[in-house]
Image (cartoon, rainbow, N blue to C red; front, side, top):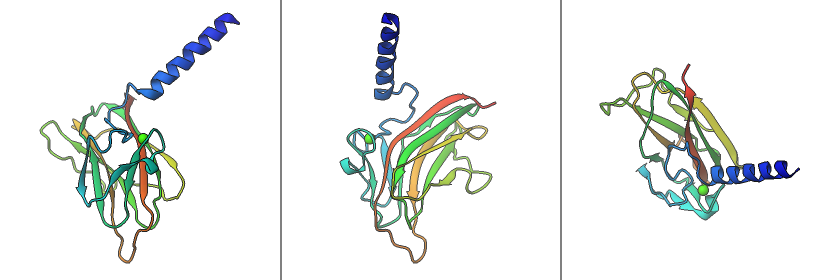
Length: 178
Ligand SMILES: [Ca+2]
């Protein structure tokens, strides 16, 4: 029993370390605990890191629904021979759609076009409650870097009312592509 208790204690410590500081996370400040450090607003304004938008920790990304918006994380190196997983928490998507954008560039910095328009632009689930979105992908041939972003757009005749919240954006390398 003594050994078992020690093992459990070790596991508990290990889990705590992992939760506090994921070793595989490629995106800096994916939890918005340091405000919008590392993130760049490309279109629109008003996106903030706010306590009321937190799923984990003290802050999350709050996107007001008044206009088109686009925000991107800093570019991270990727390998097209590897498989990756992106995950995050999201809530509040209603009449205004939001997409997850995977922007790949080659080693010359040239943007890689998707074969199909929606391959790298993924529509996110609607709903007022928190949902954990997870997707695995393999970067296209020649990809050397990835910029993860979120964008909203305004379908004709639609107006937004509630804000969209995003938190705990994690990008991990999970193995070989094949
Ligand atoms: Ca957070």
